[in-house]
Length: 159
Ligand SMILES: [Zn+2]
Image 1 (cartoon, rainbow, N blue to C red):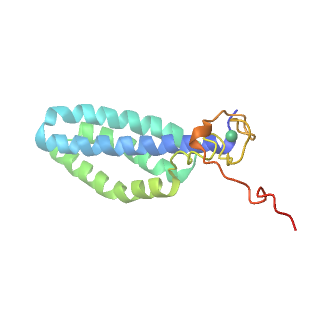
Image 2 (image 1 turned 180 degrees about the vertical axis):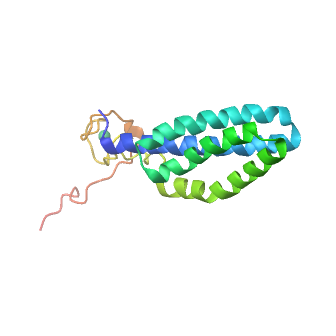
Image 3 (image 1 turned 90 degrees about the vertical axis):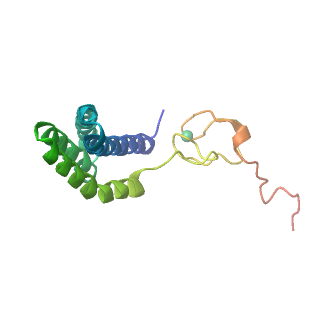
């Protein structure tokens, strides 16, 4: 069982990944035009795929996630059917215009895995448990990765 929050974060991370993938493919495409034009086609195919899948994934998440994959999906085929000069210009424009939105997307929405003392699925703190199972979602965890803490009232003193 996985919490809705954990599932949503994974979807968001995937959407960020596709946005980054599209960005890298378009950037690689115009760099390839400068160096090895024959490679640009493969980069643009990658960009179309990343843009298409990224757009589908972002549809579930909202407008801020749609911006980059939709832009990728428009720019990549446009570059493909243009002359090399125009494709280079479009690519430069794309990479310059979407760098900041891409950075903000990751900064504001991408989340790494939780620290080891939190449940990796639901984020429940796993401190001071007797059994290596998350009480919230039932996921097993490695007790060696969770620091042992002694409860404050375990010293035996009472007043
Ligand atoms: Zn859990």
